[in-house]
Amino acid sequence: MSEAVAHESLSAEDAKFFQQEGYLVLPGFIEPDFNSRLITEVDELMAHREAKDHRHLVSYKEMGLLTSHLPLMEKLEVLMGGRFSMHHIHSARHGAGNGGVNWHQDYEQYPQTNRSHLMVHIFYYLNGLNGEIGDLLVLPKSQNMIIANGGLKLFGTQDLPGSLCVEDLTPGSAIIVHSGVWHARRPKPGGEDRPRYFIDVSYCQHGVLWPAYGNHMDEINQTALESGLGRDGRYDYVYDASHFYERGPIREQFEKMNEGSLALKLKGIG
Image 1: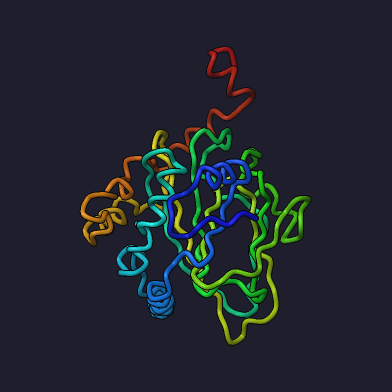
Image 2 (image 1 turned 180 degrees about the vertical axis):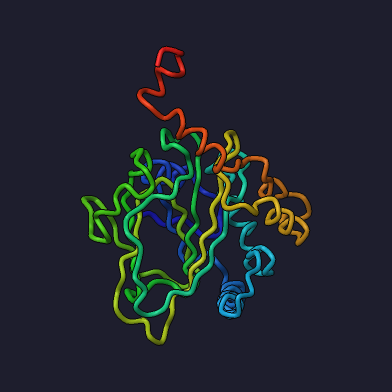
């Protein structure tokens, strides 16, 4: 398992490892003070959700800043070979007894046909991993297996040939994962006095239109820009919703013509 230097730009060796294996570990990536503020803010978020107070995550100061965290932006510029836009940010606090998540991949494409452009997820483990509540399972080199997102869920959270189990990470660590890589969260006992603080942020390479996340991307991105997350204009492009499309109308249209060979239909002989 390769580990990149957290606060330096990606080396050619790190970039090559990511391209081949589909993931890269960044131990202690978030500096302690920022990490502590993020944990406090996730607690606030959980309280807000309990009170049915649902806000865009980019409106929270620390989580918003995480979406354009400068050390990450520099690494993504190398991996993406240019510009990219945020797809979503999720935050959660996993308690003891969490049920985990079966094997899946998160690459956004409808239908799933290729991996011409890069989409990544950044998994942030604010208080690390210690073998309790849940372990991260990753299947290296699986990013080019073109299968529907839930196509491997029948394997649950068991080990697969060649898979890795990540169960020991220092607080503030992050893992950059190609969104097409198969991964899972295996439930583990323990953690009654130590919930797992987890954030994931996803980005899509410019060059194609991507399925939007929900129906509020314009509003979320406008909130991000108004909150200064573009870092004085340097990263305004990260919050450009024009690189996404609403999937509902496309899905309806596609289902009407999804018969036989689509390749032949493109040639007008299907």
